[in-house]
Length: 158
Image 1 (tube, rainbow, N blue to C red):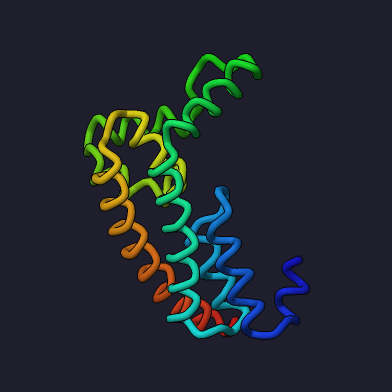
Image 2 (image 1 turned 90 degrees about the vertical axis):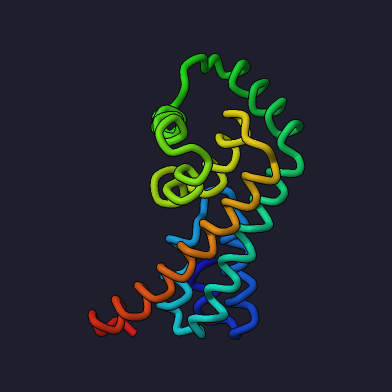
């Protein structure tokens, strides 16, 4: 699919970036450098990555109760009773820095979607989680756009 996206028109490439950013396992740390390497406009790449990730965070925030029920049932079905490494790491960040720390460190350490779900699980209000995750996504998107532009330029990749 990625080879197809590289050879497709620019509009399709932006659409693929948006869909990748919307996917739960993808984050701006992957999508932004990918778009920059494809030679797309950095501002538009950042906008697509930010928007895709933000929509996922909003959906998780608004439908958290339904998601939590599904997740709990899935864990029970698989026989998982202990927290994962990501959950344990997130809990430590949460206890030390609260929602701002988890939101700002989450995209690098555990991923934006997991950080949002865990913040809601730990008891944060939906409004605080969505607000902090939006700020965090904006900050990390800008950082990755600038770092990708200058990093790939320095390495003569683009």
